[in-house]
Length: 399
Image (cartoon, rainbow, N blue to C red; front, side, top):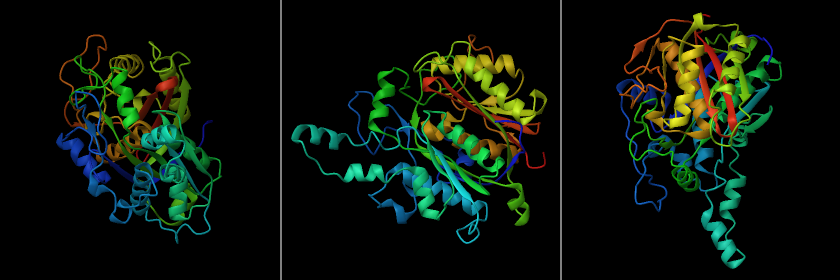
């Protein structure tokens, strides 16, 4: 992405294990509340009930709770989009005649939730097709477009755990290029038996609440949820006299080209993504108030990410919110972008849940208590399997 104008962010919606709407999530973050528990929607076969962060049952509107024809990923995406559009004072009537796009990141979505179908089909050669029909109807970007009648470009981004960050960056480029007047951009993902067992098999799941950046960290807790940002052209925003909540300033992605699941030991791709996003945003370390880190609590991720932050952004406060939400995979980048917008507005950042013991191998520590910030911009970053790294630079409204 070349140097282009900033993009107003006029609406934000979020639901995850920390709360059913953005305000509830922020309350959890700033009150230090978290309660990972064994999954309720599926059962594992391990003797250890590894905890997860599930979306509260009450978070999904009653009209969708019993909609068996779409996945939870789709329900979460629609719920977050509804909150974001309402926050932006937009509805279908207000969007009539406008070019409105949808760009949503996810990982496997609901593609791996159909084990009973696969086993039945392999055993008998036939099976009830309802799970497959549900999967085919659950593309999160398409569901949002259909629900709200949005007829612009519609893209689902599947780029592992940087999907949500990449979707926001791509959506902003549609505004900057003039392709769209408005874009609903974010990420959505649901807990799944296959990914639950997969991360346990990789030995990177903690038996208790996760501890990002702590010396004693043992791995992640999985989570689920969705977040959406309403990105808007400057012209449309001014025309309807809507004050933005924050601004998209820059985005970059870079690949490690190193390993299928491990980050580059020196954080090569992450370094290039941070430097690229800062360059395109026309910001430098003097402007950065904080970094919302990926911070999964896995030994490799936190060591590499902490090392890069120590060298590129020394002295800049940073934290991970995965101690409150779990790792929501394809939704993570969008949820953390939503939190970043809110923290810029509030002028404070939360303590990093689970951190107690500094790790000498990282040699830098996250915030441990609510901290007041200075600076006009912030970084939200994601690292992903496959070596993908995505970085957003977001700024205060007055910037």
